[in-house]
Length: 249
Picture (tube, rainbow, N blue to C red):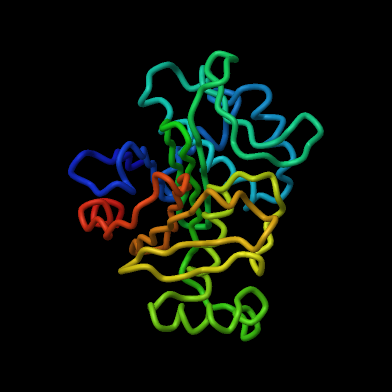
């Protein structure tokens, strides 16, 4: 597992952002065979809802990546707990607990067939989202279903694929954490510079005093969209950080 943390040498987008990246084949076999050795009871209850073997494997890889990232702050595997379902079974943004106590900060995670990615941020008034998509073709109607004509033109001009555009919106949705349902057509993607994008919402979808900036990092096997949500009073536009992109690649 590759663990990174943004430093003072990186631009504002990456500062204080802790990132974990795990290739699917790097998940230790013992973690698949003996989940009770590193998952809490409530985490195992969430795992039990994953019926398909593929979904179960991706869920375990995602949790291993997230908890491995949190271990950099000390403690043991079962001291940390990551819960993404409410008691009623509905989904929620990942909640982090250590020894049963809530931990401040924002954790986000995503997994595909090839990669699992987690990111953790503890700065006040800011939140983070991530989405990873493997390189694969989409159907002919995918673009028109989820993107406006102007967005399609923007994506073609900036050189991102429809799946990467989807990842930009998904990561932005996770970062906004506004309690709304994911409705991609109510989100507008615009290209800022290099691999940097901004996502805005139509009225009523999220607070007007927030902006979401998204960066795309391409690895050898997948594209990762990282989103960071700021208050507009603190928001600036930054250039892409080659050093961080190279580390993730």
